[in-house]
Image 1: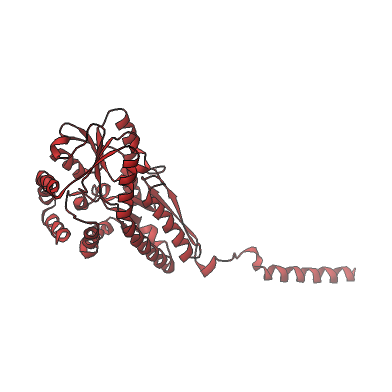
Image 2: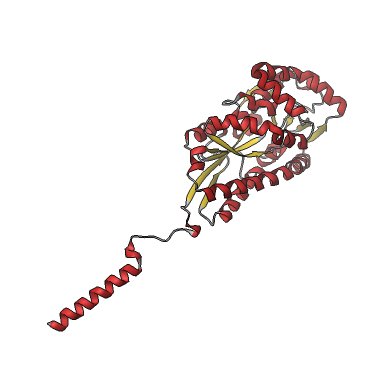
Length: 339
């Protein structure tokens, strides 16, 4: 009996030591670096095959590497969770952590965002980035911050072109009477200025609208046309480079503040690297997509310097409208973009 009690006591002490050594089952090992693991959800309307969305994959990879896998970005493309129409509301409310969306959609919240859709404002890809870095990005970004949204990346989309399935258009007059899809308010104003009628719809709906004859054409970037196989329903493409609808990778500020200081730093560093990669790719992707449209049967027309003057004169009322609707802010933005 005595031996049994002694054995029991020893066994109990050994068991307690084992439990203590294992942390009593109450403490769990922290992730590498001692950071709390966070999952961020990012939505995009563009297809997964679009080069901008592929750069979101790069952002995901870079953030994971820089945070020792404590921050995971889950990407939902092609409007699977949020379409471009409701994405921004979800970011503002916190229902969505991050989103890749065009400034045309953000202009519904901050009207001055429409500056990127003012026709023929930017003569080159380089000028777009100079304008953003020269104050335009901060000026508009500050307004987003007031809405509880942080702009992580100003993502160059490249220039937009006119595509249609009626005829090869060389002048604004050639588009008169056509039904053209615009992606924003000022793209719609540009369409009206050249004598066509404008319809605004989600980019994912355009293919069937063209195919069914509801629309005659659209304004869009050619990489997006390739991603959505628009060459199957478009016959003609007019290369105008008339606007550059910048995209923004925007983040709900509360979601950003949930990250530790180290995680925030890593996310911002990764975002900067991806932004630089996007800037290098924009022109290349545009030119490649233009060639792809041609290879797939589209007839292309490239505007001459003389053509551009005609288009600028025809669409000048859109500049005037932007300044009228945005006052001194609009005037200052135009000056920043053109100097």
